[in-house]
Image (cartoon, rainbow, N blue to C red; front, side, top):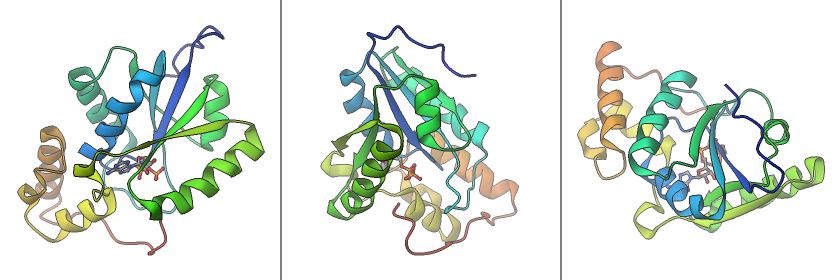
Length: 187
Ligand code: ADP
């Protein structure tokens, strides 16, 4: 369901991502970013450069439960297909919100933000992650979860995500369907 179009005066933020799965790092960005907008839409999409463990609906449901528990009422979740900028136009987003963990992120995010502005005239605002989450990435989490003990990830993942990862691994006979596609995914 696409959130209803807001009045033009409302500041609408769009936090897009793959969120496979959502980490404490993502939640940190949502908590920090929510104060900048009248409405913040966390939008779960598909990144063709990444293979996924959780379906779009599973990712959305986990985020829904977490934002209800930990974020302000004006934070909502949605899913989308296609380009982020097209979705941003559909929902009348004021700006795209992205998180930065380190200077390496900046390289890719800078390119993405300038491209999005050039093709769709949409601005991007950045929030730096808290020091505790600067090293957390969904890709590394999937690698660790696929090859080892999932409980080790308890500082990096919300409890419900930890549980869902364990369940997924168990349902699949101990094998998580994850593989590294390349080393350039920027995650
Ligand atoms: P995408 O595939 O679009 O990069 P991700 O789910 O990997 O989607 O990331 C969504 C956003 O969250 C990106 O802006 C990314 O930089 C940011 N992000 C991811 N992990 C962290 C973290 N640990 N701290 C801060 N920001 C993060």
